[in-house]
Length: 227
Image (cartoon, rainbow, N blue to C red; front, side, top):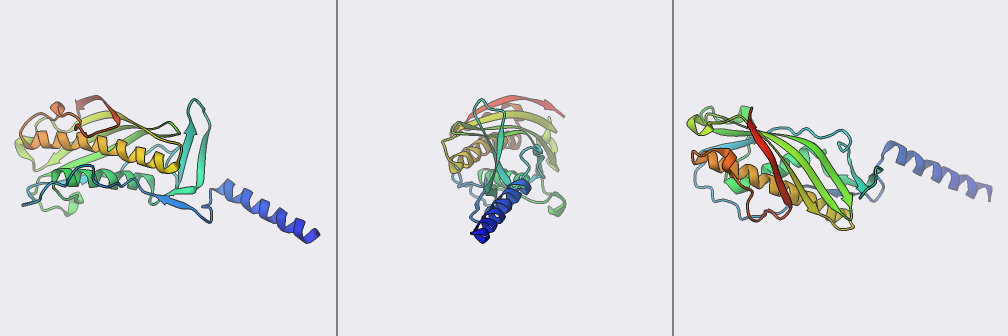
């Protein structure tokens, strides 16, 4: 009897310690923000330019291995020790946006230093201001980006450009639903950035770009300004 109580006590202490230090549970699930293409990839016949998505800044509150979720109207947040990001959150966001832009524009995502010296490169630096996961409600993404160019000549008129947008996607009562909502929000923002780059390619102001029709989340452009 005493041994059983000791073992139970050890088990309880172990679980408490795991929660305190944020350890992954034995049966943890891993999630990625990269999603299937929302639109067919553009055909690549010749590489005439490229993109370079830089490292992403995210709020410290959500910059954790665990998903951080809240309830509508509540101030408390919860770290899900059995629901983890497959990579650091900033890397997940960077890879998701880069993947969308690469497919939509038909260009590679290159490290700026490894790109050929004369190749036009559109550089995108992202700053996430809010990355809210509200259980059984929505995923809310408040994000800004700095769009600049190297070797783009007259097509880079008006750059660098800094823009900010809010994307809100409804989510159901599961972790899968929350992650999918964040995927949709990132796809919508990526679609707007891709439209801006396409405007510049055509020699038009990037500010005239509009979010694509397929962007299902509510996407609100807060504004753009020359940097």
